[in-house]
Amino acid sequence: MIENNDEKFKPAFCPIRHVLDRFGDKWSILVVELLSQKGKLRFSEISGHIGDISQKMLTVTLRSLEADGLISREFFPEIPPRVEYELTELGNSLIPPINNLLHWGQAHIETILDNRKQYGDKEKAKAKKTTA
Amino acid sequence: MIENNDEKFKPAFCPIRHVLDRFGDKWSILVVELLSQKGKLRFSEISGHIGDISQKMLTVTLRSLEADGLISREFFPEIPPRVEYELTELGNSLIPPINNLLHWGQAHIETILDNRKQYGDKEKAKAKKTTA
DNA sequence: CGCCCAACTTACCAATTGGTAACTATAGTT
DNA sequence: AACTATAGTTACCAATTGGTAAGTTGGGCG
Image 1: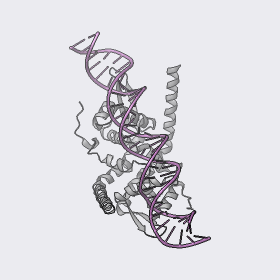
Image 2: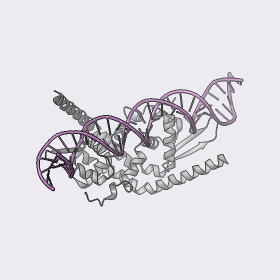
Image 3: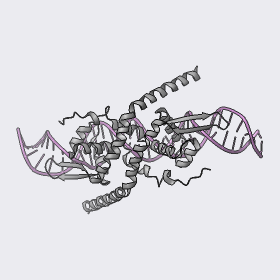
Image 4: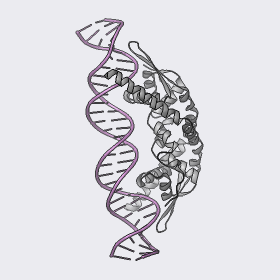
């Protein structure tokens, strides 16, 4: 049996899990980063900048970011309606750590893709050997 | 039509997407963080520390981290077999940005959960009004 | 009258993710 | 002969995620 006093990795206690649960989805970080670069944006503008997000996913993403207090939503009861989204202070505090991760990605993604490719080749070679 | 010269958010060009594709899954960051804290670990030790990961998912997680060159795998052909995993240099370079995000999470998760709860209550109130 | 706009909501469907349980190899132990 | 242990693999299944397409709202305009 393995000793386990470090509950940092156990389901209910792990802070990493909270972060992953929040930002592990396909769009949240993208929207936050976009808002940090462009400031206040309308629904259709966010949609246009990202390009391949569906209306549905943009709505649920914005709703959950709003629910968590990371963005604010201002609705203008005009016809046609207008809605503006903006990062809150809490949302802005997320930008530095996200940018750190981003820079790491930019710096190392090529190496990673290279490694992955080489690993794939190695696996193919192994497969050939065992079937030959 | 929205002008869109910023291809940073478009599918093929966005570095954020690479990072998300790599670490958006349930276990990768957890394993990397664990290895950074404990150093060299065996399969069963990782499994024991994390607690609720299935054998299958631990294998696929370790394989993909290895494929990307983030961890190294040393196999000892004993009976029963022994395998040791360790962060590579590339893997180690990931630790600072991950820790940044982690600290943000620790600092703000309570606020976020509070916000989420309040938002849920507000939504409930709205729903009552419209059905009443 | 009917079509437009933006910002949704809804119903339905497909793909991906991850879990369970059984099976594998191999040698030592009872 | 049966059971142990480690580090897997495999088949199958359930839940989650995300996409498509249609409908909704309501005032302005042809």
